[in-house]
Length: 257
Image (tube, rainbow, N blue to C red; front, side, top):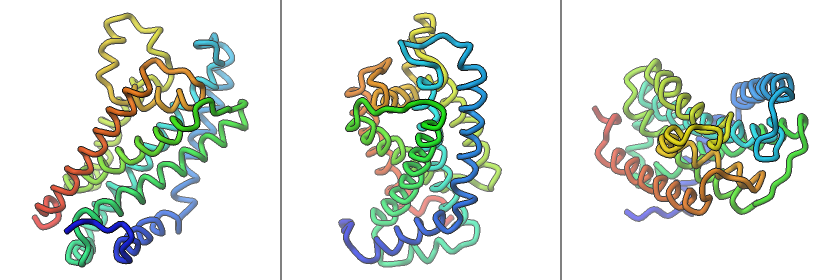
């Protein structure tokens, strides 16, 4: 069945998933707000004033795009993985997989709703950052494009996480032991230019480098990597992961075991 993104059933599932996190704003949006106020206060103001400018930017301004990416992808991943796993755990996801929705429509609803949460959280973090330092947007097209692509990618990865997790501890393990190391070695807190050539080359294997630098290019007009190549690679990777999500749904992986 070919997905019809305008079908009422698709919008019904999409609305349900959006309402799921919008109904609890204090649980959804307050934690990243508090966390990023602390990040900007400690790393940006207290420590940042003692760090030299990076590529002509104050440290707090250089830090801001990375924190926006960190918040967006963390929330996109957590939303999708938790929603899928919670549905499996409480067995109400059967109502979705036995509905007239195609597998493509199901996956798109989960991905788009989770990506929406990631983008909203990213915007909130950027607004918080604006209270600490003047924030501009040098390349609005790239900023919007990278924000959507990275949020979609991690929402799609979150679906895989939700399907393969055996319990709630597995979701925490994936976030803490896979996502966090990639983020912290992905150029959120530093420029690749300060690394020795060997580690700079190794860092290019980390997909997070392209996400952080893509959003940084949108805000600051500066990037350690080619933003066009990064956007093309990330877009292709996103399509591949969404296709994998659809294939897993079609096979009933984690849904009918």
